[in-house]
Image (cartoon, rainbow, N blue to C red; front, side):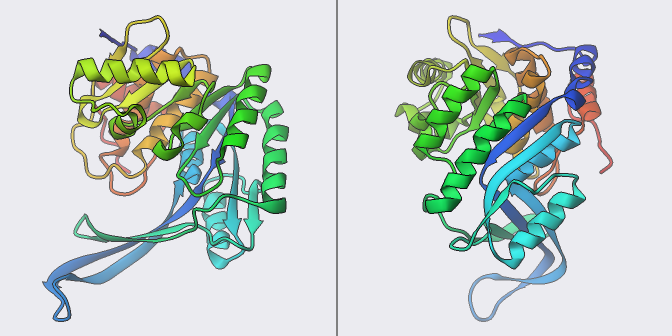
Length: 338
């Protein structure tokens, strides 16, 4: 298994091209609500902590967080998804606008709520998460308009991220048509997979499963390098794609490509506070880098550095291009001061 290398100068050169590239993010947008507080006592009603609320905040999740990462890195982004006709959709549009992300690609569906995930965090520890969502597939005129707009937008972008969280936006027909159209237009397509949909993703450029997702998709327990490599080979064969990037948590990442030795990217994180949204950061960085001319190996190194920075923060986070270069230069994530 060969290691991947990238210098800080190479990283800066690649990052200098981010601003000239546009990435279309397609998939499930979410609004992440954080309730921050302190827990110093146990409820007399049940054996659960009582959280005294200090503050509340809204952040972008799912496909919206992928879009946020692309903008923070300096790239241009378009976002295509479905939301409800509710107040949370307006909250989502407002937060997108604050981050400089266009919301004209959000299609309202009166039969669905805007996906909301509420996390209660006490003393930097998540206590509970409450989800409000629907997972059934898109139907009718909303689905037809969504699919039509996706293919219209392919003509003006350099890369596509499919962010599939299993909320009904991504289906087999969409992936089949997207794969064909993107190949014809020479557009790079990366997929953050949902394990139950894995074999919908054939013929895309790259898929980015974690170890658990890769194990479930291949029905092979990944327990060492041998089984990891076997899983990577199986996925390459079954999906017929350019690459499979398996994220391995504290063991880094491994990139598999046809007819090449696997490339291992060692972990860079010093401290892990919260992995929420780390996969969004990985696929955003990978796709923007590839669209800017990086090889898959270089893009993997950049995405690994980006993930190392964001897991050191609580909640969904993002990383700048300069932080990427500094992380690679220093060999670990720099103190961002954010």
